Amino acid sequence: MKAALVGADGTLLHEARRATGRERGADAVVETILGFAEDLYAHGEEHLGEGAVAAGVAVPGIVDAERGIAVYAANLGWRDVPLRKLLGERLGGIPVALGHDVRTGGLAEGRIGAGRGADRFLFVPLGTGIAGAIGIAGTIEAGAHGYAGEIGHIVVRPDGPDCGCGQRGCLETLASAAAVSRAWAAASGDPDADAADCAQAVTTGDPAALRVWQDAVDALAAGLVTALTLLDPRTLIIGGGLAEAGETLFTPLRAAVEERVTFQKLPHIVPAALGDTAGCLGAGLLAWDLLSTEVTA
Image 1 (spheres, rainbow, N blue to C red):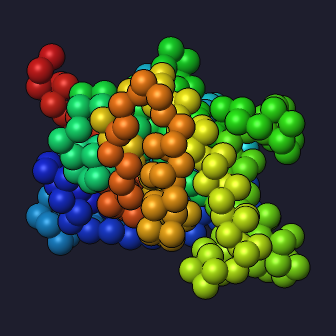
Image 2: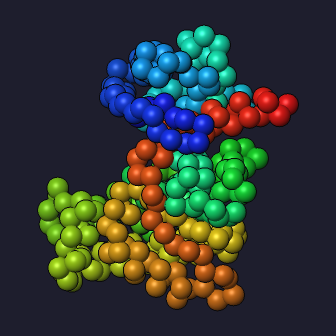
């Protein structure tokens, strides 16, 4: 878990981290979140002269942001957790916003990170899976049911690997950091090899690594072109573990996307700027948005 105290302009004032401890069960994880928030509030009072005036929390899985409920998270084992209510009670009644982790990270990247100044952007982190956040005029589009941006489940290879979602050949089965790790472990014969090792082997010209890498880049480009055909973003922000390969990823990716577009306008394809603090900063922005909404209302 990552937590922060965030100023009104998005400045990171204090950051802290704790183990999620998901092996202790869903109830224990929720209690850890509440305790972490409480300690952060106290830190503000003690070191900054006042406690937080609002709180934001970003969680994985299915999120009902409107009702403040963490609906479901497979990795954490929870269902229908009223996080907004629980946090509000623990923090003395201050306003609380709840968001989806990727969309919240995208909000921060769009407003104060790599997408700053872009009226339309798409944020795509490449990690264990692949998700997306659709930025429109400073806000993130969640969709009618909260499922917008699930670019990882665009089918790019109909005869490809089975995906946990029930389809075959989803983008995240071919181009996520986890997918590259699996492919490189098989190609190199080293079961412990991962995507970072593959990227390193690419820089030395290893033919097997180049094949694995290009397969992933081609799949990623196919998925991204589908997305930009639908969304026409001005900026395409790529984050997550795979983006840490820098130009080893971005040079062939830009070329592969450009190769595939016909009438579409090419967006700026840029690396994410905020790293793993994006979720914290985005949660802080959600909290500040709550206050500005209250003032407007």
